[in-house]
Image (cartoon, rainbow, N blue to C red; front, top):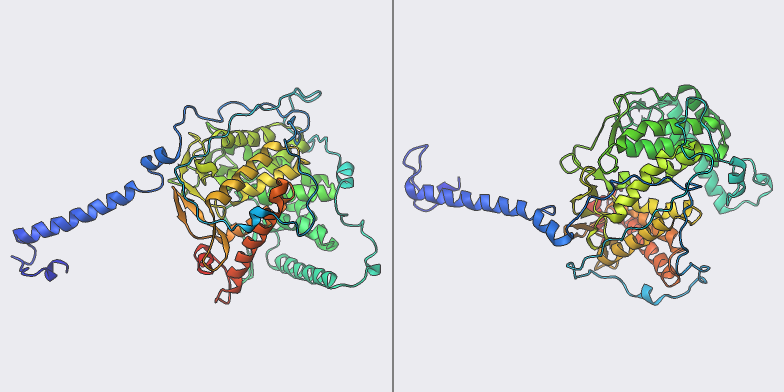
Length: 511
């Protein structure tokens, strides 16, 4: 069709072209090929951009064995921070920095210096220098449940005052409504899909999926702590009975390391810490052992999928040609795995996640940012895509929570969190023409001005971390958290759909 529109074009035959027309056709074809190769050359993970944004590597990090965790797995011998955080400022305290709205930054050729190596604190354990792998039904524990409960900030089930004597309030009525909604959800799940991983609300049947390697009851285990905290005693006992009688670990499929960790192990650990019931502790530890083959890589960075039968592992096929591990996945293991070591006495869990920290601490980071794809074989970033939303989100969340979980002794987690937050604020934070603050994505030096819905958690994360920030930054972080949350609220409020599900594109549309 293109050639028929060329002036003077008359084909010699239905299938042939004269010399001038052949020349025009080849000229068009060569231009198209040049355009395609030019686009490939400018992709973010091209060798030219790698040389531009990353310093040359001299060695592969993370190949050394991590020293045994000293004493208590949650405490490390660290020097006190140079400026310990004093008490929170009075409400309404002004911060001059918080008045300046961050704008789009230039200076992309500046590179953050890689974090220098730090000495890992090492000490010999007095009585368990060589902790044995826990055996069936006889998993040892040094955890003191009564001491743990005595330190809780808020009372748990059965320890509150008589609710009949409490004055009625709007908040209390809202809580009762939420409990009513949870009861409805649980009863519907119990009726239509008890023991299945998910409930299909339209067809009213259960669904197992293929993310959990044959494990069942993801919804049951996910719900344990919620049922307990809401004081839904009958429903909690039903869930507990299912775990005792029907939650079996003799499965042989392929499972997502990340999903099994946050949903099954996290759920079981939460239930144990709230109740002290041994069944939750024992099954969490055994399930943690089934995930360990995922870490069998040259760098110790785990791959995303583990086979429960063969012990083999692999990366997701869609993750940069199937050769990458995902930041949000391998970076979101720390909380659960440290507690698996504490509850079992087996140091291997803590060693695995401390090695991940070491690799991330030592690797060169473009402008202090953490790209989402890392090779578990070479220890190199595979593509320079940075996102605080999907693929990166929970890595940052786990840093600040690791600091808090350690009773504020994990200085490494604290430093990594605030350094990452500063890089995000410097290079990704923007304000739209309409005045909405958002966190953009970064692709090889170019900002992609969109904010995915999964990045909306960052408002709560920044607010959570504001308390322990430098005094002059606390008010600023509180205001930043409020502004990001406002943007996410507006993504719903301004949505024209009856079912507001703001995606990456719709988040940009409200700005």
